[in-house]
Amino acid sequence: MLPLNKRLQELHLKPLQKWKVASKSEKGVYHIVEEFPSGKLVCSCTAGSMGKPCRHVRILQNKINKSDYECR
Image (cartoon, rainbow, N blue to C red; front, top):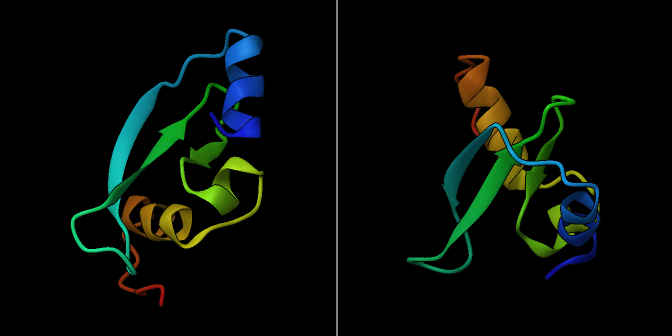
């Protein structure tokens, strides 16, 4: 388990929602993006689990905000 996900679990914070976002580099692989009560989105990818912004969270935020901008 990656560090940030483990810490959130230790604090007994449970996600409100979960989404699957496809990996750009690996076909057929999906990363899980979870929304926590604080409004924070956390991704299961390596960068996201260390608290860094990642492409998967940006894609999801754009979909939530109904933006047509596609992250590359």
